[in-house]
Length: 422
Ligand code: ATP
Ligand code: MG
Image 1 (tube, rainbow, N blue to C red):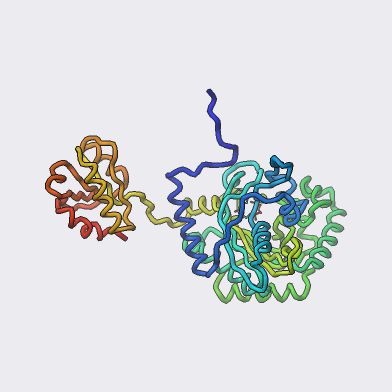
Image 2 (image 1 turned 30 degrees about the vertical axis):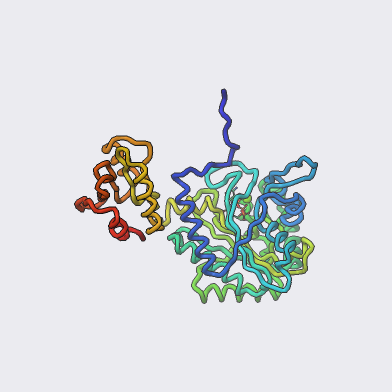
């Protein structure tokens, strides 16, 4: 019979990779805790309307990337393509934005119907960070400091670059949009096909067109920075001063607009040239109008999301990863000694909770078990044979060091192992 396979673009994370995932997630959580951000969890599905109203009808995500279907009750539901909309919905619904500020994060799978390739999948994972209630640029800077600290911990600062821009107010952006459309209309023939289509639907997205001809055309066109309102200009100036002050390096990219409708003022991306076309590792910005747009009271907001698969690819290729062995101690149980082996391993785990103790199950010769101990990556093999069992002893064999093996009373084992319990 033909075997059933996974859905295209949706990957299994196998045991050999999950240790690295756990490491990455651990560093992220530790960093976020260090900044006093708190976790929020919400469902992976929402009513379709939520994403349409927040992300925008004529964006790539809503137009072509959402997993949308009718449930048994004929209600249109969508697997979340990103977390910001759900986060706002959850906060509003639970009164988290009432008279208080919030600094939140979430981590988990997102779903987009895209052409799968390296760094681009249909189920992928993000850590999202969202803050509510702070209008000033200090929080924008804190977010970038946080992301920078994370890249530092992962040893990745040499291969990522921060690009920032200001999108200004709604009014500024719409004036710029008008000028851009007028300019590009008069040069329509020189535009690539994608951009021509966007001219009518989402003209700002033309700014990040990959076509060189289009980019040249834009060089001579209107610049968003000339249209910024005074308050946004001031906000951006203070934002860059704060980045300078806390030592976060950046470049200003006036063409950075982001693909979602809800952003205003600060927009940013951490990009890399190590992942081919998938250059964005982390992206976000300010979205002061979204909460009101979704029916809440106007609330300033700023956040970002990191694509974990891309971060992981970078980490594997460029970063610093400690050794991630899953076995420290391999207990070989040779002969009819399983009962004693179980209680001995249990005692060790109780006394040394950080130690990873693998107890051999399923029998087999001494030689065979030692081979497996070596292959497991353990630094120590414990040998419990029938002689040891009768004498109440255990043999400690060092697998990675030139140290003589020793046989000792089981009661002294914890003391010996304590050295490697770190
Ligand atoms: P791209 O331009 O690469 O399509 P995006 O602008 O659609 O990215 P965002 O919506 O800003 O991406 O999502 C934030 C981050 O999530 C991205 O910077 C990226 O690291 C990651 N990401 C987005 N889409 C995917 C995907 N299909 N597979 C893997 N990671 C993704
Ligand atoms: Mg995309």
